[in-house]
Image 1: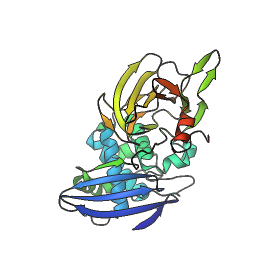
Image 2: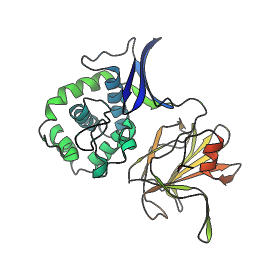
Image 3: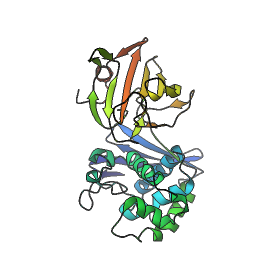
Image 4: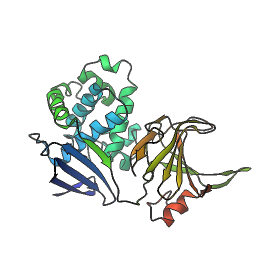
Length: 311
């Protein structure tokens, strides 16, 4: 089934393979969110389309990756049900967008970011975790504190539906899986400092400014070499890819990987931070080949990757 979501072509496929059913959402032809369902059949949740189930699974998966308690997943689900009926809308009240109807004008992110379910779910959880004592609040009040809706009591009625979805989808996973060999932009933001001479020194990477907590994705599949504190970088992640190329992600606020972990292109690995020798929230993105740093913009261009910094 084909549909248009947020101006992008979306292909929804249900299929059975051995003991598993799969729903695949392909966004823009380049990346996909793959939800693998355990059991003999894809779970049927009355009243929900494959697109809505895929979005609900994304919300649950991001909650797991961010180590949010299960109660937080319920809060996120009731919010998305109320705001968009779990649809990735490219319209809304004033400039509201996406699953959670977040607004660029209110600092939630850029339009293209808010139409990315992974980004919008991460932003929701980031704001929820910043609410003091949110686990002690009612589901409705916690959602309203994050959303500040004009309908402050509308979330509570969706709690049974959210719990039904969680029961049906709890054991399933969603992972962005571009085709083998593809590279992905590690973070959505503004390039502020490029590779090359800078002042009296040499900048060994590319700085991409983005709000604190913005998702950082693995630029390519590989093995995590290091994930933790590093001098100058504050908190970093280093990934070695199949051809020996190493990508580095620095100044992170929080890491979501461990050394030795296998990661895939587009997988959430960290959040943008301002740690170490940093003058504002941004990602320092560095690429090394044969032990030497190389220009990330030129590297992506040579390897057929997406555009970095408008090249």
